[in-house]
Image 1 (cartoon, rainbow, N blue to C red):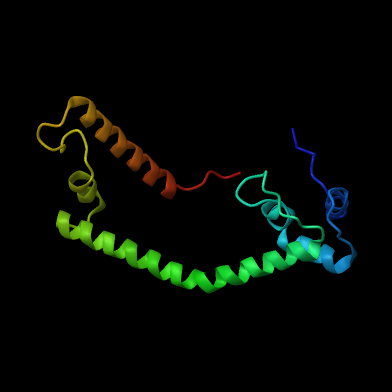
Image 2 (image 1 turned 90 degrees about the horizontal axis):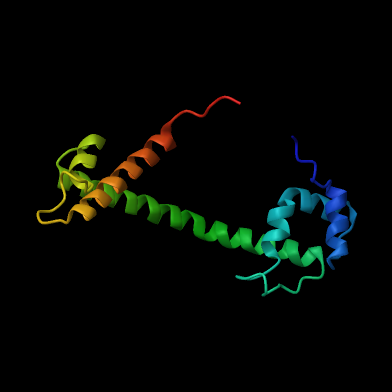
Length: 151
């Protein structure tokens, strides 16, 4: 059964007006369409907790906040991607050097604790936990690379 509780852009604009946000005209309608209702309004209603409502009264304020947020993200995005890539490569190189192989299977067998390679003296319940974690990791890896089912 299809969910028919969606609102048109005009209905969303009415909803915003009904909730104290001044919005009108084709320009603000286009901004709402481009930003998306959930990102453009829902994401900026409060800070940290819903009890800390932001005192917006016009869509211009919301749109200005979205533009500021977008510009701030664009300033940091390249640097964050550089750091993320560098950390991944450092970790991967360290693991491959420790394992002595670039094979994913060797990494699983030698670098990920499991029942059979737990340190000497490890309690049985901890070994089982290691094995469970390893199986969950493997399951996540397979799920992330398996093809999607056709619709």
